[in-house]
Image (cartoon, rainbow, N blue to C red; front, side):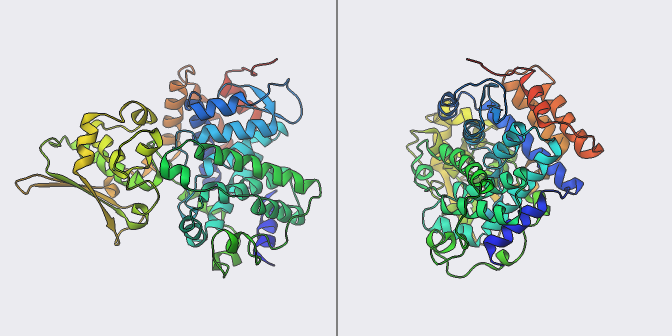
Length: 460
């Protein structure tokens, strides 16, 4: 059994396998994260443009809603618009070993396809887990992920088409042969470059929406009997060699994906690259300490070396576009030091903020070869030799590895920011977590109804 077949067999088995309670709980947390982000990003230019491309249709088979405003479209258009919206603020969750953001790739498919097919929340959670586990498996302990990054290929949309296809394969109930074909079709039609992130243009948002759409397409084609390349992942001209530049399949691909990986999925509490998150968390602690930043001589920011090498992280201006501020380690750290917050609006309204830019000039980013991805240190140094240091590890674990109460709090805040009545987010979260804890299932469309307050979308 090659890797393509192994993944297909795993997906076929996942169709009827209930997730362990901790796994299902984390999958529910990931769904809330995706739904909330899509709503708060509704006015971002790319998200609004993707939503406008959808053609409103009456309720019926094969339709699903765009979460930002409840508009009902054909399934493929809803998946694309929802994927772009979740990714629009660069705040969707992170799976480290694949260096990717599954939240904008898997939930848009598992939720929207579940709605179109009249499926239960439990079925959506199973499809979600399969998609996330596939993403981690593809990254192969960073081996394949770093191979792609080293060649200028972005991991999220590249792995994402396959992760989305995995979720769709489980949702559609594909057998091992058809699920393998879905994987193969996705692997052969995937990709995206890192140039938009490096330069700060807009189409990186579209990459993940297209990947979600592409994964859905691959699985639906496979369900109709379309055959994919048998060695799509590891063949002589397959994904591993052609895109990642690797000759030998990683050992991870000789094992099945592990659903327990859900525990390792990280939320992004702030709107910046995942690479910058640990530095920003340490900076938040410094801000709360109330130290004298104006009198500081320099600011040392030590983060994991691979993060300092990612496109855009070492950029220090001039900041002309939002994404340049989100990618820049120096800007993200300086903004948090100065204001104790880092929402998407900071990059929109404070790109030329004198206080932030003055701190950017003082920051030196130091590659750390000792710590790991979750480690960062922010050190303030004054002319008289005094130093004040904070580390990311001192922060609360639930800030990044959310539990149910933290996820509920964040979801409520996002829905309130999106104009939903107070308590809507908490009520929807309680509805979802009740299913996880008590096993009393409900249709996923009920969740979307509550999200929209019963609104069925624009009809024309």
